[in-house]
Length: 297
Image: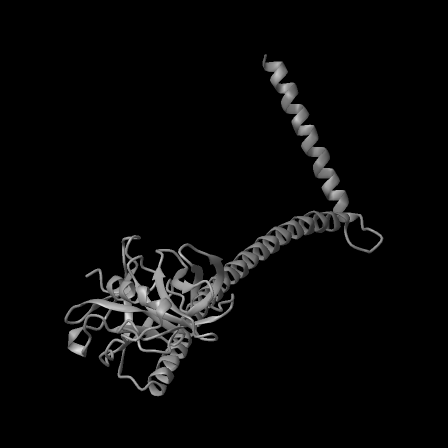
């Protein structure tokens, strides 16, 4: 065992002596460039190590710079998205203000043109029951509003006040099943009674079969109901059919979009005395229109 170990150590010693000789020789032998071979080899080895280290360091630095740049880009993108969101919200607010200003200008123009005393009001709620088509406005007895005062908009008739509180009032819309208004065809002056249906259209009843009524005709208030002033727009005739009892059945689309009310005007001027000398074809409808229009409290 001792002899084997000695042989192994002798081999190691011999290898060390040979390597030492090679190193000594390389220090004395010069390359074609005139540099010792040992120095050239050492420089080659260490330069490769340095180059690899520089590449790793540069790559890491580049990755870090890219990460930092990407982080800044993300932050800038988030700021731009926030600014865009704020700009969109502000644009919607400006558009809403412009729409409201336009509507208020129309109300003001109607107020200046009308010979009636009018009071502006905002719609603050809509009726919860589909059986009763009503809205609530933010004006009441304190502003001179009372029951059976007509409610209008720049486009035409809206309805009438059916209940008046101190600071708010309930308005029955024209399309309510219990609503009615004396009406006439503007072109031919044929008269009848406009009835609510609970749906989007109105029905003009008690118009004689012989009356001249066509789709597209404008329908106005006749003033015979004692609530709505004469000459205000109700809507436009959509269809004309044969009814029963010698009367036409006329469907009318309201001039005012009653599903999108925001501001209205209330007529404060008391209605004039009811016209008892109504045409024959509307006489049967006059009582219905008056009674039905005031039927629900």
